[in-house]
Image (spheres, helix red, strand yellow):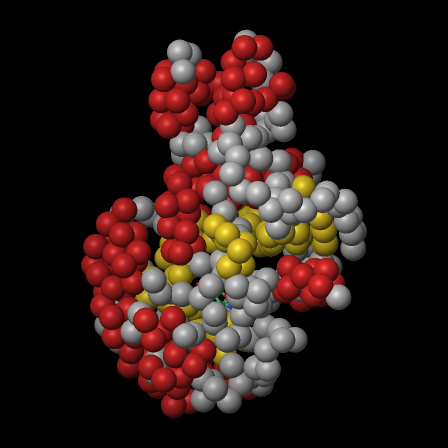
Length: 363
Ligand code: SAH
């Protein structure tokens, strides 16, 4: 395990130039033309950012000095500082990155047979308040800019470059609620998906929401071929509200209506994440309730054995009971899998590393 602590001082100001990674190619081209430059420079800049992956405007050697200075005066080229980097025995890598204002975010790289998958953060903290989650412990500090999400992928890709490997899959399941930072999340998706950007296929990208209903409709209307997951965790209104207070504002029946709209509109299957919390939502009757709720919906259920969070007192469901839960669903014709766990030895569950650092800081 490697641990590098950065010494950068914290400064909390947010007003500054935008990250150049926040710009889709056509937006960058527009900016160039508006600023008296040639449109084709946009592709050259994209090549420096996403193929050559330079870390300063100075290195963009086929641009004039004048243009490089202009870029530096209008944008920041977001280079995240690695505050902590850990590698698990199963190859999972976890990064704690420090932003320009001293806040920290987590990014995780998981190794699968099918490729390298990166889990990105969309907000500093989270305001959804799920009672089992570490990400929400200190509330929401701020949204990430699209470019700060893109920079996570670029940064991890640079680490993989040394091994001749590629980030092939992206899951937006790190800290934060992506649909609470919708525009930046969408910009991020478009940039990493574009041929000239990181060229990560839509089918290799997954976004997950706790259920911000109006944004589910917006997302359905985007009609992107991206995998979409909902954190469900209970098919029972009362239990879901207890686990996820957002269920009081965005109610389960309305959520399911939005889900049906999404599936109809896109023709795509939806995923439901269902964390098993010992004694709360993990009994056979809960599985029956769940099967009933998703009946007739083109979906897949991902069962997640609860990750222990020291600040939360949920307990794990015994293995046998997890299998019994899965069996009930299978018997009723529901597609279901149990999530394989990775990075157990490095606090790889959402928000755990950051929560730990925060605790150490406040001590
Ligand atoms: N805010 C979004 C994206 C986070 S995805 C969302 O809620 O969907 C991370 C997933 O891990 C979510 O399904 C979340 O509910 C789940 N999760 C968070 N803490 C957990 C824990 N302690 N145990 C199991 N799953 C957890």
